[in-house]
Length: 433
Image (cartoon, rainbow, N blue to C red; front, top):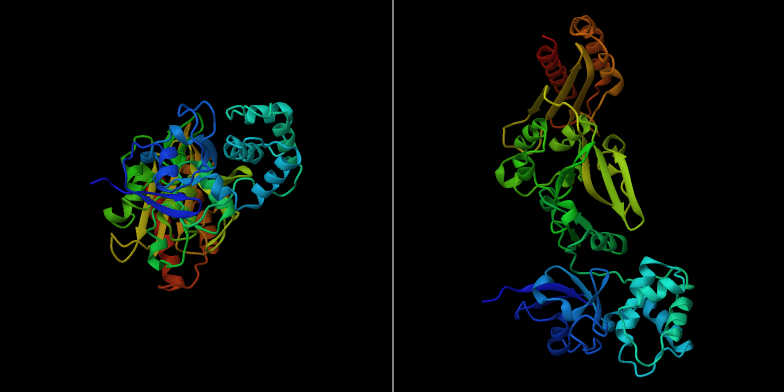
């Protein structure tokens, strides 16, 4: 029995159960009766069978059905329902750019994809954009003029938004969906599904390759937002402090599904992995169709569940600076080890250089509306020897006591404050002796 291939065809969820090696071209014409997609060469040379796949122009004669799971396919029939099609149709008519018409469905979709990527192309750019679509009637000049005329129309969304099924398999497709639909980004779902909404449209990001990688460059360890906690624990590049924090997150069944991006994007001060990322001065890579934006995690949180994240942006990567994180302290206080929600959590890291404190950082979770990261107070120790830091310990603890002001929760404010101070004192015992 062949598995079902579920994909979005002209904004309708479609289930295909035939041979996965069949051409998309043949299935569109013979199974779904979408004959606007023309059969020409079947070798990818003429462009008559062009369709839009995940926001990009492709030759449907070269696409196997098995590759379409979760994809978005738009044929000329689907595109003909849009405002953008009407603009192109009028432009083609005005320039008499249609003769026999056989190439026109593919040519129109090629024009649309060109204008989506280059809103005011010159003649050379237009000719390059339609170069894969052959026309044996017009000589191309009238088509070039038509595309140029259409490009002068303002505020046209040349690639239509899709709906119902949001399972992109590329970052470009995910950003298009995020920009033009109302949907909730979904990676692991371990927070979202607690209060699952029947009417919700989720943007499932688990198949976006750029969000599934763990790589490094000269400055950062780069973690895709859809990487699970289990994958973090098992990966050689991940610092041990991050692995230890992940091991404290609930139980294996949660860690196998929950993701780092989801933990951060949930916007909770109780998020275990977010606490460690804040401690390590992590940055976030946010992307939208407007471009890329890098932001420090500390600036990303504006309050409880309030994020510096535009409605068209996605958290794509978490960037952890490459530093010496070998000496650290981490403690999560909860009702039981496998409980997902902490009553209070704390982490600290120290780095020594030439006998002096080169870097010192602390972070407190489940205390305030956001994760606390007392930069100025922690800086008191930087540059000092162990003996000097020991002498400064009372001054440091006094400043911290004034700084930590817990909000009301399941346990009293004073309880959490006392726990925070005790954990901080234990960490200093470990670091300073």
